[in-house]
Image 1 (spheres, rainbow, N blue to C red):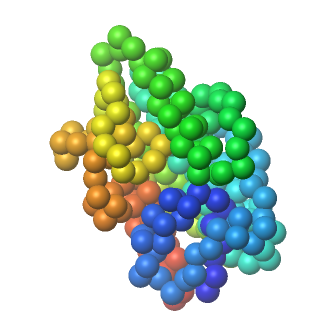
Image 2: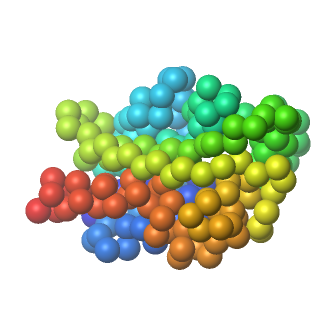
Length: 208
């Protein structure tokens, strides 16, 4: 069964492929099929994930799954939230998608540290919502959630991962997310928690 991932993020695809390896599905990005990215106008992760999944499902004429995730910082009232990926404004002229994404990550992290300067409360959560649809008009979307709690560091640590991973410290593990191996992150991340719920939902409702 082919399922289109409503994202063009290669690292996100790789992470989700590892998480869904137990299912008989082929996960492909919408970009590989020439599907443009959907608008994300909503204020919640679940609404944006549903919009992205519907867009991809309509464009491919089949099943789609969308991930809407981000960082929610307590002291900032939940920001950056649904705008986590584009928290900071950047100006970079390049056709290299990965170079642009890396520059955006750097700018986002710098802005977050600036807004938390002098703030004692560093509590934060990585939040993930996964929505899967059998087709664009599916009245029963599968919806799964994951939340990974930690604290924001004063400076980046680690070279792995992407996004805010270098700033997100997990006290229970004693290191930042960017200091973890990919297999470890795949076991305990917000996306891993949501994926486990989605695996159970797909087995029960799509593959039974």
